[in-house]
Length: 249
Image (cartoon, rainbow, N blue to C red):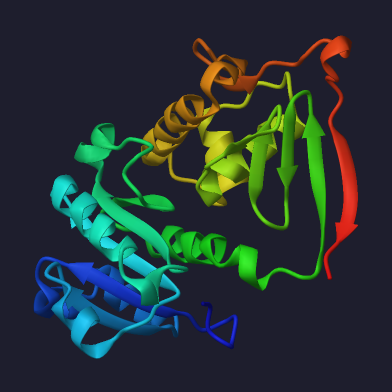
């Protein structure tokens, strides 16, 4: 459950070396603490979480090059009742990003070495569902239905289990079907930052999103030498996106 104050999050950082991570100025713990959030650093054995009954809004897994260890930690954390509603952010070395898959269990991932602005953007995104206002809208395009309040999507009635950034990427491209965007444009307009060296982030999210969309994944097309687009559907497929304002009680 999210903290009473939407500006301050309870963040637990899980790392192989808690002492070193807490001391390094470039570590996720130090960066998040510098943003004013409440931070606790624990080891991969999760002893502190069990013994102290720690709760968290966001769990940051500092996996680095140890992707399998990070994956195992996420699996064990998901089994802790007190952390059932916590969002999970996996921090992984850029050299290991190719090993990520949709079943890793995290809500989102961040490439290391960490850029503070990127980490700040991810934390805002992970908390967006709980902190946004009571109004919102539903985006419809062809068989896609995207609930922009609950961050839930479906395709022809089949629920899609998307991470927050996968949802935002699909929403952005659905609203602009037929338009080609470069990786750099997607980084700026979906992720909110500009860093040419991070274009692999886009490639990995596109790959994962295609896998989760099943047959509809073919609608996400790579345009050689340019970037990506969502194929614009025929009129018979209800190609024009529809926007439905709604409020929730």
